[in-house]
Picture 1 (cartoon, protein in one colour):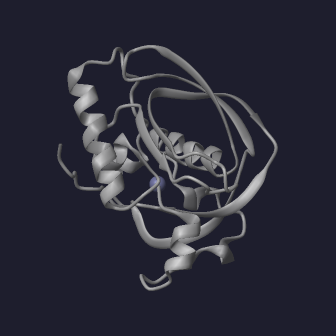
Picture 2 (cartoon, rainbow, N blue to C red; picture 1 turned 30 degrees about the vertical axis):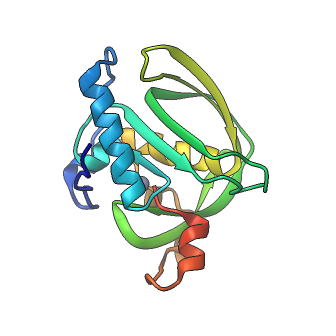
Length: 176
Ligand code: ZN
């Protein structure tokens, strides 16, 4: 496995639409493993392939246990061609992005989503997510369409720079 270089805002690849993946093969599984290692090293809670300069529809997610509720389990996902097929409710909360280091802002998102995708075994999966996990997945799917979280901020005054030593706020929002 390898830690890959994360593409930063300003790079045109972050503004392009990623292409659908026709089928999952070993090369794609290796890419997903490298993306996971890169995400954990950053550290981040999600990473989309365009963030390492690969314009294909693949995302990885890692949300630690107990983020919303104490008994929430740790979630690790690798989703190919993820698509939101149902979205309900609204939540507004802080987000950061590994491609825009140090910046955080309050982003409106659907509160609960149903996602359809392929897993790394090439099988159809359908999953439901709400709260923080739903937020992270929506952030990552946006990356596949060239959309960044700063585009979605309604209250632009909420966009703020958080220094490295403000650990609490960084951990609460996460970066993806
Ligand atoms: Zn991001």
